[in-house]
Length: 238
Image (cartoon, rainbow, N blue to C red):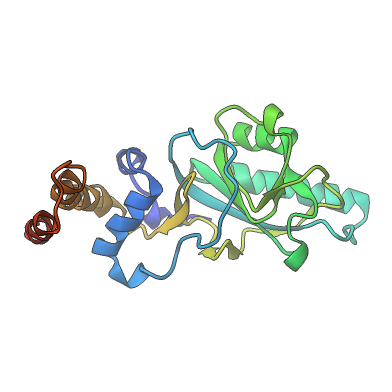
């Protein structure tokens, strides 16, 4: 769960939501260059709702599988599911569900996510889900609840929660419970709390550096000489 000393003011989360996830990744390259190769999704994910705005929240992690039935008695499996929901709904928010499907090459065999779980998680305070498993019931999905998934699928098979609250790895991104996540239709990135407040300023710097290059690239009179000059100008912007 998120540690109290890593919680950020709501104003910082609001500021981060103004930018798409690629821009946040650009900004992180400036303020935390050591994270250039880590901390974000690196494999494609399905996003059925690309027009939804970026989401920013604290991770609630879990693992699932669907190719085999749970070995727990029904009463214990039900308790585990309720304990998982209690975990998701507790602690600081907003929350983002991050779920790893541990069925290996058969990940996505059964969908944990659909009409019911999207509605439940939204009611618990979640903004969306990031999973390498499958999702279904897209027309009945909870309104405004974002989804990034490994695939779409029709059945839930034997899907069940195997564990929760621990580190997971989804689409190349390693996430611990309580990590701050930024996500949109492009993918997701973990934001270290000590640099989060610096990212809006860094994002604006990135935009200012791109402006002269984009102006030349979009000019009907484009030339390599103009591009060279624009790139030199961009490098001088601080």
